[in-house]
Image 1 (tube, helix red, strand yellow):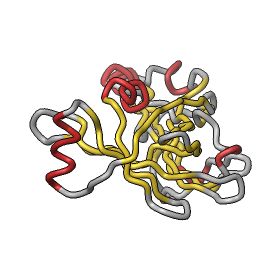
Image 2 (spheres, rainbow, N blue to C red):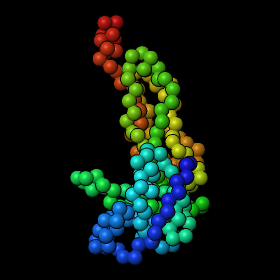
Image 3 (spheres, one colour):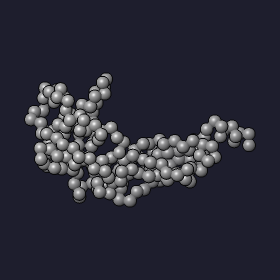
Image 4 (spheres, helix red, strand yellow):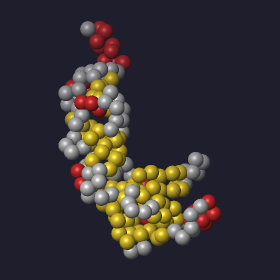
Length: 189
């Protein structure tokens, strides 16, 4: 898993007025929870931009006023109209405590159904997994070479070492759908 370094400063006040003042200084209010105590801190918009706007899962090395801790990005909130970043939640992680996180899916191989004229469709972009952070990969690779026309791969058919999948077993991860041209060729035959 890639590592992202982030510098922060503890917030003195919480609440609506203090948060508005933080945002006016071009900073983002953040919360770090999951450890012994909840920490409220701020980071600059430029400092957190590359962490927020990427599909990759990254381990965050937080340095809050000289105190280092490891965390993952748990949630980010945006303004409904301007889409400005309003707030970020981080969860502190430890070597012995499992975490729950959504990992991106990458499809690998050329499906048999695609060779026969179908179209490969990725139905889920991420899967929710539970495991120790050292066992969590950057992406989950799903091999689709044996996937035929009209067939699907469901969550229940997948397994990854040292990870527990938390999505419903009957959710469809990817499918090979019939195209109009493939349906016409099948009707003529």
